[in-house]
Length: 307
Image (cartoon, rainbow, N blue to C red):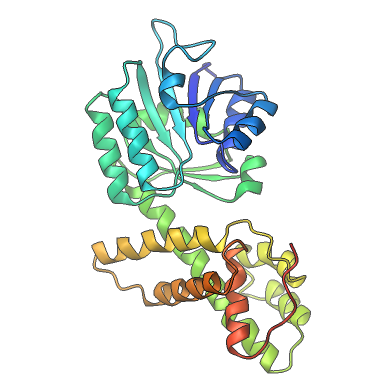
């Protein structure tokens, strides 16, 4: 494996373990995270951290690219605005940058605009959103969805392999962004399905534990259902992905549907349930808290969630 010099912007719950995997693969990694708490966590993990992307791309790194090398930039960002901020910084930087690998969940429109900004500087923008949660990121078990220049994908595939065993190249444009929204739509709607099914079962006299045991072992016990079963059987809503985060993703999904003239009525219903969960004080719980919304509507209050 060729040793690369990498700047990693965004060392949150997903970004930090991904950056660590790159460092463990013997790449030079400089992290960017202005938040003091996350900066301390990254430093404790052995990653050199600077405050801004400009700092990392300039003389801020102990070991920067040599005369025949260029930075590879990776990022894990919260939203479209952060993505476009990074794109503008890369376009305006005086540093030598070869490729930008962004792993965020963002809109296809913002992704295309960011790629166009990079193209002004001849920087390849590889769209590489990941499917999985922070636990999967820590265990290098993410699925990487990639699109953008095929040559950039081939050049960077060894980096993507550090994050998980499954990678799929989907095309030259925004296909990876769309595929991430497709997958998150299915995850969100599954939670809505479970909410109604579990509430119906309880009203029909079935015990909560019996419902989960049976559903998980049935033909509808998909991997996402099995993954949720253990914690939710104990009414543990400790988040792998919060109500607030899923609301952000569903906003992207509904906007994409509107732009492509695709009606998404089931998704819209789940988004309404998530808004209700937020209003009822469950914004920081796992997005499966839509189950609690359905229970409350049916007069089944259940036990308080464990944390």
